[in-house]
Amino acid sequence: SGYCEEVANKCEVFMNLIVNQKMPVRTDLADIQSLFTSAEFKSQLIKAYSSNVVARPMFQADDVETMFINLGRHIFREAKNAMQTNSQNRGYALSMVNVPLEDLKRSIMAMAYYGLDLTPERQHVYFQPVINDITQIVGVSTILGVKGMSNLMSRVEGVRGVEARCFYKTDNFVFNGNFEKPTFSRSVFSGAQRDEDNIEGGYFLMHYVDGGVFCSDISGDRLREMAADARMRYLGHDGSIDDETNPWFNSHKEVMFDHLVMRHGFRQVCDK
Image 1 (cartoon, rainbow, N blue to C red):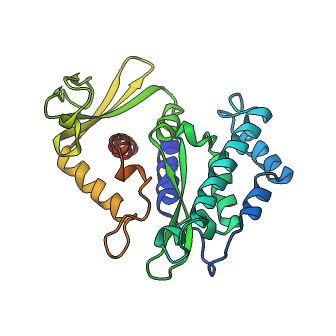
Image 2 (image 1 turned 30 degrees about the horizontal axis):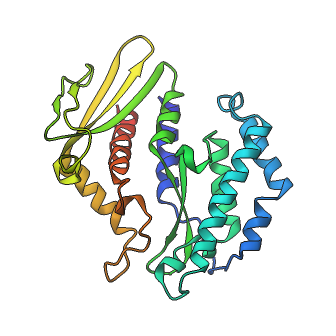
Image 3 (image 1 turned 90 degrees about the horizontal axis):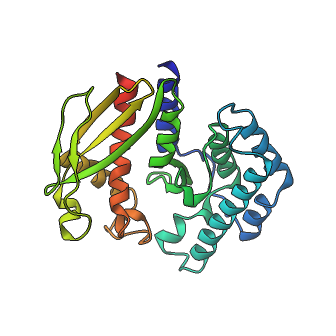
């Protein structure tokens, strides 16, 4: 549908856009605290959520205020941790400390107009500092999480819900075509057999309110290619990891592969 294509195009821009086009500006912790205690900015967010007819029932003024506070605490904590590191460290440079507040505000407002939950724990959206390797200017990349993509797709008329997951070599999976549910059963729930080298593929499944489905699968090799590309964005020139807490480099990376499957499905739906 036109709505789906519009969302896909804008989300692709948000996921890759470096919104800062100015010279780097140092942000102090006091500035971040001031932003997330600003009555004016909070009022703007409440109005943004109210303007979205889908999000309006879910985000009343009190809900937006709680979400606003939680996001502020999360970003403040990230910036504070960065300031405690060596200022010559790339991990310091690639942090919220060096993201101009106006760029962060624009990114937050954009997601509010889409009616996505900004609470970090809800995993709808992530605000990721990015550095342009040519200009060395730090900006904000707005990344949709699996739940954020699922939320947007579930709003499409006639859609009841979506799911996306990886399957492994020891699992039982049979792709039965684009308009049939796949045959799937999990054989191993943890352990070495669930590492990324054993990913056989992934599948995206959209459920329609009339009982129909749309299914799309993706190979394990393609998922690993996409993962390698995603990881490259968080490595220094010497191959070192900028941020060891990044989910691509810790035990949460399995969730990130599910995210890649969801991205694949999102694009398939909007292309069909």
